[in-house]
Length: 365
Image (cartoon, rainbow, N blue to C red; front, side, top):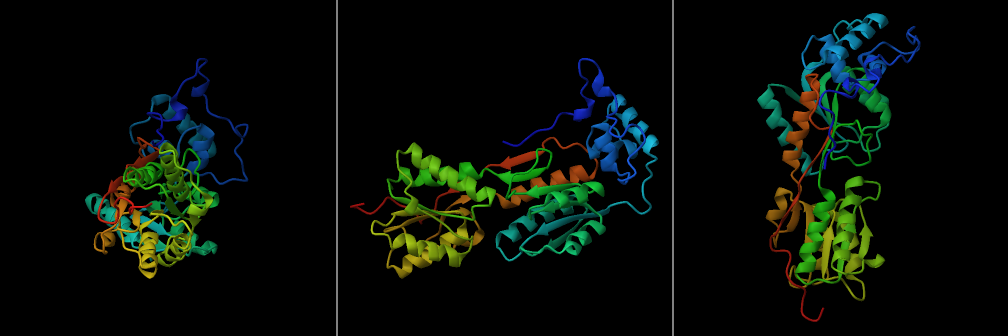
């Protein structure tokens, strides 16, 4: 499950000798002239979080007396002054690497729901998948949004840039491992993968293939690991020929399925890393003259609205994208108000939606 933070902050916990109440003197009391005096620098020096320093500077409650005194002393020592015009705008900036995928609409819908309730604006930005041009990210920082919700993976440099400007951020459905202090909202991808494959084994399938996603994407690996766990629990081998990796598109799902269906002992069921790959399996099955689910069962992952209308309607793992976006936006706005979040990381449960694309394997298999 998600990671949780201490009730106030790490710097408020007093050790047995009371040392936690002393400022963390990182520069001998002289100040480090090579670094700008920012809220992030004061937080590091005090051994507390950026939201805690923000509370103290803005005179808000929710900070212990000892911590407040420690931060105020460092503010005075370093001569910190809030920069003119440094206020953040009342906007949530939602950052994507790509906007072309159908699931982007589900995420935007969730962000908008929360934004309307809190009377804040929403700005949607798209950075190219291979966009390494710094000005694109610099523009986001210079706009000084209230907070950033990033569907794109944030690099360490980008995270540090946001921290230095006092702009809180949340990562949506992380694609890679994050440091323990980076807030995120994701889904139970491993559990979802396990549930999908277990559904197929319970129907009687024994030769089950999986079309995996890019191997450098954390959630893709988790779904594959869940599949392998269900196969192992059912006492079934996962032959290397039954796992094919492909990008998360209809075209690549189709190409991967063609290879699987051309095997001498073809699979009777295919689980895919996302719904788009599953739609590609539908195309490949039609080309091979196979009927779904009579000859081949198919399970996807995401539960995009369109898959309820294909023929036959797709059995898939429901990833609560809108609910995830709601939770991520609430978390980002909490941090934007300078408040401590109850959890650093949150995973929202997936569930299997059974439709008409799965059935017991054909007789003789």
